[in-house]
Amino acid sequence: MNTRTLGKTGLAVSELGLGGLFVSSHGGAEFEQSRRAIRRALELGINYIDTAPTYADSEEVLGNALEGVAAPFILSTKLGGRPQPFLPQDRACLMQSVQESLRLLKRDSIDILMVHEPDRPGQYDWWTDAESYYGPVIEVLDELKQNGVIRFTGIGGTTAYEMANIIRSGRFDVVLTAFNYSLLWREAEREVLPAAQAQNMGIIIGSPLQQGALARRYDEDVRHGARWLSPPRRAQFVALYELLDELQMPLPELGLRFVLSNPAVCTVLMGARSEEEVESNVRAAGKGPLSPDVLSRLDEIAAMVPFRPFDEPAGLPFTRNYRGAGMMR
Image 1 (cartoon, one colour):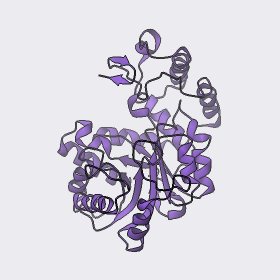
Image 2 (cartoon, rainbow, N blue to C red):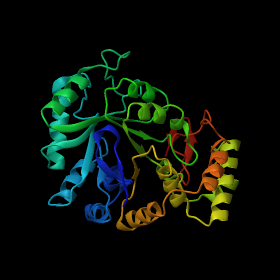
Image 3 (cartoon, rainbow, N blue to C red):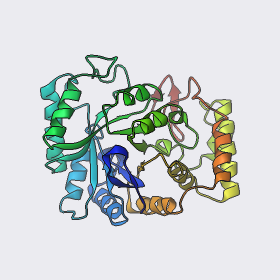
Image 4 (cartoon, rainbow, N blue to C red):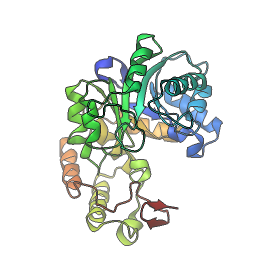
């Protein structure tokens, strides 16, 4: 497994990282299956693992699965959503969340602690000064870093432009950006990635397969169903599938290799929940960057829908009954 330097942290991280959401009960996996997937990832050279308090029981699963592991690894978790009620401007609440993460992860320190979704107004009210992105969380992070409880700080979010503003504050070491940099969704290219590069921040890409929309093909839905697909998005998927046929390449491989073809990306998180999925993703990453010709073709396909259609569901509900108005059942 190749490694890349995680920006100003200087940490050498594996090109593929393990996202903690799908090894939790949220992903439906039994603990033993998750433990095997996590251990297999480490065996294959993956050394970066990301989790969060809001990822169901992910921290607990990882703490148990990683107990006794001798190989070095880098672990990141987040602030947000715990304890309940979560008070993002309450110092005691923030400290309690960190202590609980340490307990569940069975660690004395955390490599990277991120502020979770500081970019979404109404999600968590982190800032006492919204212009400079300052609040008690900054003071807590600085204190934890000074005391050696955490090594580095970061932000994890999903917006394309507000995240860039927070990045420009210069307060954080790494950024995890999700749902906005993949084969068909490119908005992070406009501001998030350039802003992070200017700050020499480590760049972590989450959801490269759009939580399933790019994990497998949905030919029948794309061509004849999925009424929620806009005409330009439908045409875009058709063009992508035609390219896959031409390349004779699985969709997940193309998705992972696309993201890893960008040298600005330090690591990309896979949502593997089994040993087989881990091994498949590692094989795909091992094939290296895509050729300039393929990247150019993908740029043309991405340009067919440069911005998300207004009423498109945030998570494309292929195979699910979608009722519209943001409701998925």
